[in-house]
Amino acid sequence: MTTSSLDFPRAVLYFLILVSPSASKWTQWTCDELTPSLCDLSVTKGHVSINGIRVKYWRYRRKQPLLGGQFLLPLIALHGGPSWPHGYLLPLRQLACRGTNEVIFYDQAGCGESALPEGSNATVDYPHLLRPSYYSDVELPTLVRHWKLDQYHIIGHSWGTILAQMFSILSHNTTGLASLTLIGPLSDAKSYIDAQWDSRDGNLGTLPPFMQDRIHDLEDNHQYGSAEYQAIDDVLTTYFTLRTAPAPDCFTDSKAGLNRDIYVGMQGASEFTMSGVLQSFNFTPRLNEIDVPVLLASGRFDTMRPSIVKTMQDQIKYVERKLLPHSGHLSMIDDAGLLNDVVADFLGRVEMAQREGGASKFVPTIWEEEDKVVALSIKWPVIAFTAMFAFVVGMAVGRSRKFKAGYAPIE
Image 1 (cartoon, rainbow, N blue to C red):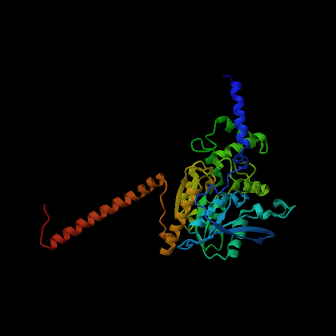
Image 2: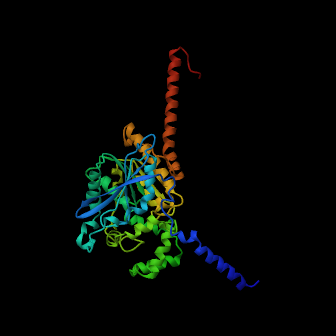
């Protein structure tokens, strides 16, 4: 049988698949279907006018409360970007199904449904949107007051982790803050870029040499809008940013709401370095000022490399770290079920510690084998010293009791 005789029936088969009802209905995956155990949720929408911009928010609650009650404090979600709307974070809504009182999302000013008035420009008309301090000192505190929250948890992603750090360290009214969950976190712009280009562990530094050379050449010549640069970025997005491909609806919807003026102004035009106002930020020396428990979560293939997350872990007082095995930078999509399990477990233990006396009573879970080795190396000298001390004290007490009873030690 010739090759041509095989091609015709195969072509007919492909045609029938394409025109079949099931094939014609499918457009893309939804974030609802990739989020395990998602329950029926109600959503309350609202907005607050801040510096002339309507900042919109969404408050998700479980329609049928759990039998034991919705016992965990509200959770505020801070999206990344900067200026990449909240939609891609929606798998985190599932936390409202397992005890969290409510999960609150909002689009930061200038992006998504908190868009600027038509015809205006962030750089010209709203320059404060290019200042990180606006988001930590003005926008977020205003929303917390509007929601009348006495106590709450914060979960941030990417740029949202920077915002969470700034809020917890610099804001003047964080008495209600119970914990921070930082997903795909970073605390130092320069170290973040250096780690990506590391020749052993970097996501970019381990690419084939030709690809690295092309990226550097395009960057050096500022060819960010070229077809080649965009093609590379699109491919690497499926390697290190979102490994769930094709992308689900919540990601593509968020991408459509990006405010590029704010994004470029703060992050820079490059996808492989930082050149905006965030290029010199470094909060690592101040991480020890965070007084609440912190969960650091990142993906195995994340742009935030393990060395970055480990450095943060070493500086924070009450902290634990979890590596999500299937994830790029967007763990809430790539590892939706596991991430929600880990966060729910963390929040429950934080609130248990609160009832027992505060953050100092928080007992971190050691998720990673590397951390277990470190913990053992720290504890072993203490254990050995304690055992030796107990032995010496025991011998001394024993000798004292023998002498008092009229016995002499055996020589």
